[in-house]
Length: 299
Image 1: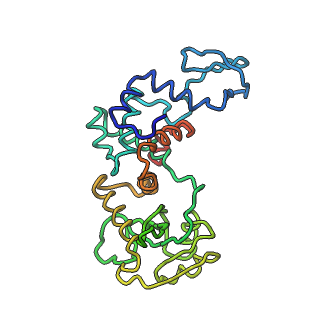
Image 2: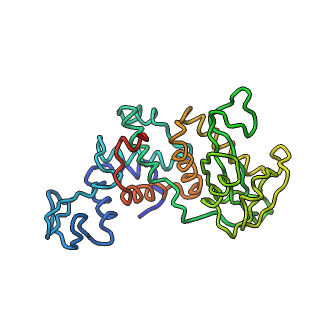
Image 3: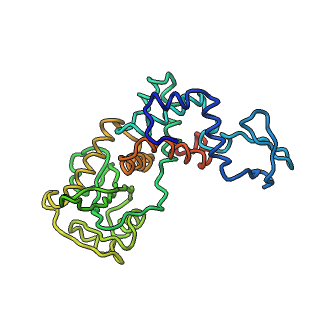
């Protein structure tokens, strides 16, 4: 399958419900059929060609059942096109714009994007290595009398950037992650750091005292921030993250902050292969579990 598809090519390939269903079938049962109810591995055709019916217990399952495509309220081909825009557009797309472009309610667009974000959630299987710069930022806007690391109503996001030096000797950003943490103390910062960076990584931070304990077991280098001059790649990344949150979304609910952070880094870490991002996202949505609305909104 061609990785780099233009939006026209994508529509030509997945512009019909049947084409989308065929692709989902090929993903869901790529390693063979197993009945979700009884575990039997033989099936016959179900109510349509996109169903599998167990020969033993007769459970009839569709290719969207129990996936993140389960019970979507609009045509599947429209969902695929939404996925293309969300996963390949450099700055993503807001739910208000999705609703306007596709003629659905904003709440419907939000719920679907929330499912997509679930598929974009960091798995933790590819931790950062090498030289990793780490710092925290506050998301949620300025509050009077709450400078620096003072929290107030803002959300703390710990950001880690894996850097390298290119052939011309210039420092570059390879990959990055962000993790919402509750506090600025050593325990919280260590938990966030361990979720993003492998133990063999070399961690570079400013001179915030909590990092002395937070980096136990890592090779740790602490140096003065110098108003950001010593962490230019990291601070540019944080600037772009906050700019994206403000510019594309305007405001996000703090309880969904991690999902937006993961969405940003899902695209960032695949910035050199955007065309493949949509297929990775579709595959993850098939592998994911059904997300009820009450769970999505955090109730």
